[in-house]
Each structure stands twice: as C-alpha cells, then as structure tokens.
Amino acid sequence: MNNGNTQQPAQALVQPATRAATRVKICGFTRPADAQVASDLGADAIGLVFYPPSSRHVTIEQAATIAGVVSPFCTVTALFLNAEVDYVEEVLKSVPVSLLQFHGTESAPYCESFARPYIKSVAMKSVADVGNYCATFDGAVGFLLDSNAAGAAGGSGTAFDWSLVPPELASSLILAGGLDVGNVANAIREIRPAAVDVSSGVESAKGIKDHQMMREFIANVRAADGL
Image 1: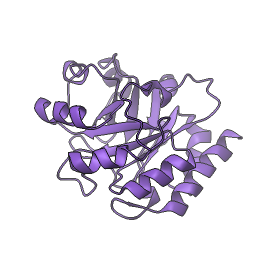
Image 2 (image 1 turned 90 degrees about the horizontal axis):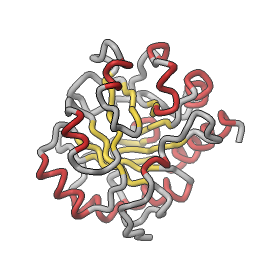
Image 3 (image 1 turned 180 degrees about the vertical axis):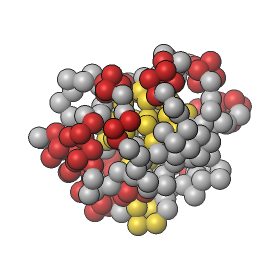
C-alpha cells in the first residue's frame, strides 16, 4: 500500500520513557516483499540505506518501490553517511521519507538543513563522551547507539558494552549493534531504550530479511515489554 504521505510523525519511533512499548526499527531492506512483511508484523519503522559502499544500499528507484508497500503507520527512514547535500535532497524528492538517519560525521547544522526530523547515530567505538556528543545535536529526535566506529555504516552484527549507555538518554535512545532474536529481550530489560534497531540480526544474507526471524524478534520485544 502506498501511503504517499511524507508528513507522518517521525516521533512515533521515539517516545517518552513512560511509553507502553519499545519501538522496533528494522533497517537495511533491499526487497519490497521483506519490507511489507515487516510492516504487517508491526514494525514501527523500516530503514533504507543510501550509502553506495554498503551491501544493503538501494537506489532511489528501489527505495521508492519499497516505501510504497509499507503501512502508513510505519515510518520510512533514510540512512545517509556523509552524503552530499544534493543527493539527500534528490532522495527526499522521490521517496516518501518521514525520518532521516545520519550515520557519519555530519555536523548538527548539516543534519538540520533538510528541515526533516532526524536521528543521529553514535559510533560507540569512537565517541568517548556519549552525553556530550549527543548534546551537540539538540535538534535530533533520537540517538541511535551502534557498535561501529566513526565513518562505518553499521550492520556488522557486533554488540557493544551496554553499560556505556548513559541512563539520561533512555527516552531518546535507539539501541542498535548486534541485536538479534536471542538477546533483544535482555537488552530491553537492561537498558529500557525507547526503540531497538536491527539489521543483520534478522537476515539470512546481507540485505535479505528472514521473515520468521523478524516475527520472532518483534515477538521477543513485546514479551520483554510485558505485552
């Protein structure tokens, strides 16, 4: 189903700490059928990667097709890594994107220049003071803590030390990096993030989502929430 609406609330992905459910974002789709299943299963957001070196990169044409099959209640997120401004604007003209995700060394003015809600990825292997780093992006609607180093796209399937997560970020925290069916429930109970983000943890191959793994991942998130 094509929602044709680029104005749905991106804040649906990040809710206050009193939220009833942990939001689920599944990233790195390359096939419309996989995205439709994720949407039907109740994923709150899907991620499309606009970074050519990534094995999960999609063209603008592919992205438009994938975005067209998801529910209007599923937030379409566009992931960029140090992209040229013209390229980001070209994507926004052609794909119904509701939320931007900046995964590189982008500055706050750059992230805010597109007049769209955005989340900023935090490279946990490179950022020494997570709280201070996030404070420089006061316009972000959320912060995605991933296990990558600065300049890497993520999706490696490697977790980071969850004890490094600042408690004060809980209401705007999207936990990523190495999450899968087996550990997501423990991650939620330990960290209580606003949302979780998974890519390789629900794949049979890079960019190919396993439908049963997505189903189990979402079910385990709901179980951890007590729903």
